[in-house]
Image (cartoon, rainbow, N blue to C red; front, top):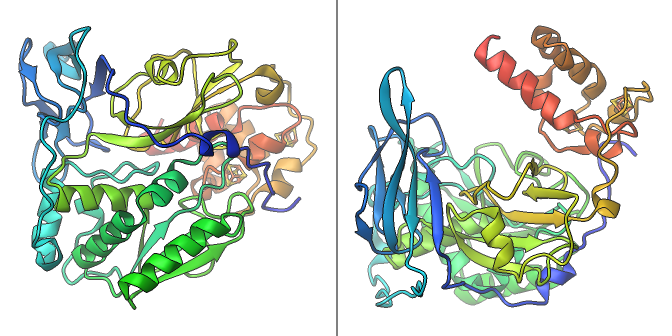
Length: 422
Ligand code: SF4
Ligand code: SF4
């Protein structure tokens, strides 16, 4: 093995069920962050009763994005003391028990969407709270900015190289024209020259579908390219060739959110999430409001068949293991997985046996063993000397490590230690 691995895909169980939007979500708990360090202020008060899609928080300045509630209900501000002041950290919205979260009026399709100038498109992205739906979860208007734009190509990354995760695939299959229209909006907002869709070669039908839609729309600035389904190829920061130069790489779900924001005037408050893994009774893809808990998301799939050994937000390679089901779905959450012991593997960590398998596996030619041994001793400068900042956090070193060392956690610890100078 050197730098890549062909993983078992395990995607069929969530592809069997159609994409659904549950109307019975009773509670969301939304952290007051806007994808970065921007200060956020509540736009609601304790006890307010709000509609689905209501603005609940505003950023300080132009850089951040406002937050919106994905359910109707009653507001509670969660506060804590910071430097002697009460600071709001989360906003909870709770619906009455018998309440059904259906949209009252279907929005009208905006007729002039294809004529809007780039400046107006960027301001719609900001006003409607669009964040990128990848691990960055950054305000979209910040990424698509700059005048004149340095972005020549919008790359729509439709690859999902991690096992189980199918949220992008299901969204593109269910709404291919809307995703393409969203990609065209992104291209015009960025003043880019072309759009490239990346699809894994294992997803032949999806590739043909996107190609046929491009042909029907007669958009000659668009093309679809195949990417080998070999992990970590297709992850956000590991794309073939020169694709990341002068490009903005965005998920298909970000393009869809741009379509909804511009054509349907819809704020960003929900996303498609794969709820899967062998422990889930009815694995499927769902539209979930941001801020719904992992526990509630699992319940929407008829709960658990058995106690999971591991709960993960994200895929099994790059995802973050959860201590309990209290974590919440955010803009960058593509999956919630409940895995049994035989899949999650032994969790007992053993000392490093210096087998060098992690070094052989690393796709960017680092020495994960040296980085993580230094991080264990809080010697972050040594981790830096071993070039930890070049790590793309693909998780391959964790995957191959026979000692089950928590490589990704140690790498994150080293990066944080370097960033904070500790
Ligand atoms: S997580 Fe980082 S160090 Fe580990 S294999 Fe991937 S790129 Fe290399
Ligand atoms: S794979 Fe694990 S045990 Fe082997 S050298 Fe790397 S960290 Fe050590």
